[in-house]
Length: 108
Length: 114
Image (cartoon, rainbow over all chains, first blue to last red; front, side, top):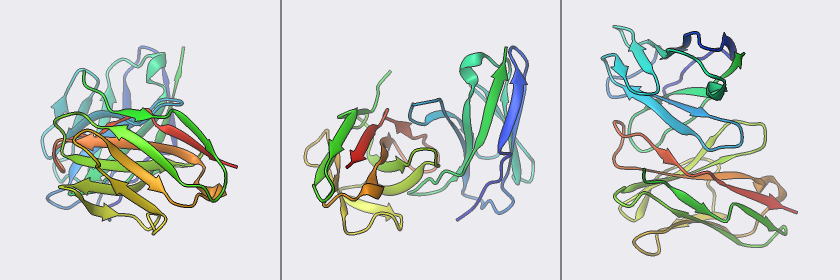
């Protein structure tokens, strides 16, 4: 399985940008880079995904390195509701496996 | 926005009993998944399902587990003889395709085996 590496935890101040890194040096050409998050006591929630180009949506931006061996999830203005575990996952065909993710703490 | 719904939200069962966890995926989705999360641990993949058959399963998904799409709307996970270690949150998810399609998750069923 292609694997990802993320920091165990990060902290941010409210209303500041947050950059969550992910390394995926063994990514294959057909792997999409997906990000999900899990708020306390809830199921995982889709955030964003991409293949090669940077992506933006209403929740976040995804910056993908040119060699695709790393990516960064960008929350432009962190709120207290963004406190969650963020998962970077490589998704190819018929399964999608979670790692330990990054626990983001947002301080007021 | 369409949602994946799971019932019940909490199920308590005795060891050795059979349980069926139910999910209603998003209506136009064709790919279905079950995950579980033991308290304090990571989300673990169990199985994916497409075209009325299992596409992929993990080492956790042994003969005690089975999945079924009994009609056009429900997707179920059956555990034949529950063990204490099956206690976990079980999440159902669906998607409209493979790699380029996000998974949409339900809020889970908390299974407690006593």
